[in-house]
Amino acid sequence: MNKFDFNNRTAVITGGAQGFGLDIAKRFLDSGAKVFIWDIDEKLIRSVVDEAKNPNLFYNLVDVSNYQNVEKIVSEITSNNNIDILINNAGITGPTAPLWEYDLEMWNKIIQINLIGAFNCCRAIVPNMIKNNYGRIVNVASVAGKDGNANASAYSSGKAGTIGLTKSLGKELADKDIAVNAVTPAGAKTRILDQMSKEHVQRMLSKVPRGRFLEIHEFTSLVCWLSSEENTFSTAAVFDISGGRSTY
Ligand SMILES: NC(=O)c1ccc[n+]([C@@H]2O[C@H](COP(=O)([O-])OP(=O)(O)OC[C@H]3O[C@@H](n4cnc5c(N)ncnc54)[C@H](O)[C@@H]3O)[C@@H](O)[C@H]2O)c1
Image (cartoon, rainbow, N blue to C red):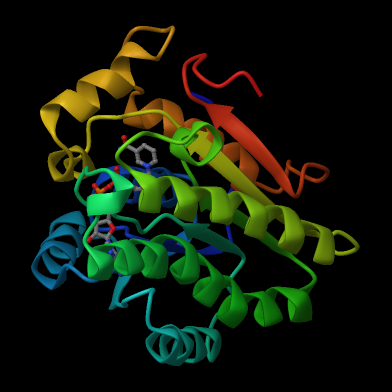
């Protein structure tokens, strides 16, 4: 495995209590970073941090869809640390259903967490990055945001929105040493798959030329490079990790 240098870097990873977020947190910690994981699952996040027994791992209960909540925690963290890295990873898929039958509240909730959540975190953290003229932001979108998955209109729209947000913000910050990129993974075996029907997951898998699920560590590797000091040029871009599914 490649080694990354995250010494003296502080990272915030949203949705960090499990799945992709937790794996990224572990690799950042192993590479010298101080890491704040944010999540709404109080029991899980506490047990993960207790178990890790790592003095560089911290947690905050943050609902990314609530701007006041995000802003309060950001001001607490930045009173002692700069935030060098932000991984906007918190997300839900919601249930699978055709658009005309989709539960209205759930449709809004998915956009509120997946898209507005990423906006909230960028809105609150970017001023600190500008002050330090340094930052690496990775927005976790999805292949669904490029291709659009049937029966997942809210999820696909939110992830497409995240791609648009990345492209705009990346350009706004391009004159500084701040990179903003999005990643578009295909399906990986995390707990998020439990939210969708088995048939839906099987249909997603059948579209992947690699013919298998994405491994979590494969995803983490890409996020690490994008989050590292070595990434001095790429910004406002979308990095595909869909096993050949997306053609752009
Ligand atoms: N696993 C996949 O197949 C896959 C594929 C493409 C994209 N993604 C994206 O990757 C990201 C991580 O997914 P995962 O597979 O690790 O899922 P996961 O369900 O294992 O983890 C997501 C975490 O986000 C947290 N979360 C949910 N709502 C939140 C909120 N409002 N505020 C803070 N935290 C919140 C959850 O509690 C959970 O711990 C998501 O954005 C997801 O859409 C996943």
